[in-house]
Image (cartoon, rainbow, N blue to C red; front, side):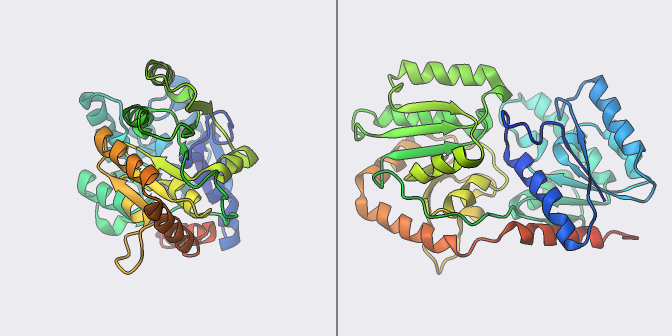
Amino acid sequence: MHVVVPGDIDDVAVPSGGNAYDRRVCRDLPATGWRVHELAVAGTWPRPGTAARAALARALSAVPDGAVVLVDGLVACGVPDVVVAAARRLRLVILVHLPLGDEAGPAPAPAAELAALERETLHAASAVVATSPWAARRLVTHHGLGAERVHVATPGADPAPLAPGTDGATHLLCVGSVTPTKGQDLLVEALAAIADTADLSLRCDLVGPLRRDSAYAAALRCAIERHGLGERVQLGGPRTGAQLATAYAAADLLVLPSRAESYGMVVTEALARGIPVLAAAVGGVPETLGHDPDASVPGILVPPDDVTALAAALRRWLGEPALREGLRRAARARRGTLDGWEVTARCLAGVLEGLPGA
């Protein structure tokens, strides 16, 4: 099989959940019996230039007729003029991390245009894979896809040691690309709202690549300085590997204030370390956090795009030791229930094996 991924999949300066997912898929699918040939195509996806479109067309044209091709939706969904023709001769599967029109930032007209391009692409595919049950439902209803054509392969979580944290309360961690979608601006405003009452030792590390939206990153820096939070909030840029593990180890609470999120891989990365979560109840995050009525939820959910609610939740976290201890116990209990990446690979393999002629 062939896997088409963004050209920056291994660029440590711009790590992303989608790239991490793609890398693990390429690594783990061979254990299910598939031979993987990776095709990395550089471009400003989902709106590539002429050269990137031509490179994708060449890559797909070089694949033999009838071959199984898994394409990252960020690459595929904005260019139906390239992908639809290839889908007529290939067994094409599109992997959607986040529906294009749901990305925060674009004005309504560009978002609608991206959604229309995605719709055309997905209808031409042999099958569609979403990374959460929420995303699968969203694709079915938003694009009119048959439910039988949309499958789910949620991200896995690697085992990790329990995070010792700092003092159990005051070290907050927010992990994600610095973009409007991830909502770091909401967190800064919430921290400003509680600054006069919060413990002076409160710290928040904003970890993630700054290059994806440099204007937003600059505005975020200005907001941090305007609110006098320079000593408390660190905009530290991307971290991977041991550096990211160190950031998790020091965290008492993961905060995910996203405006849109299909799954929220950082939620399970935190839970794998027994770290509680404060997150916006958006997209697939509530399912990822866990909503078993017979189990304690290892985190706090707040309405999306709501600074007041986020600030109130932070006050509760900082001011209620019993709440913190209960959430920490629930996070450690949830830790043992997380699926590994081998489950993700088996789910994807099942979709590929079900394709006509596979």
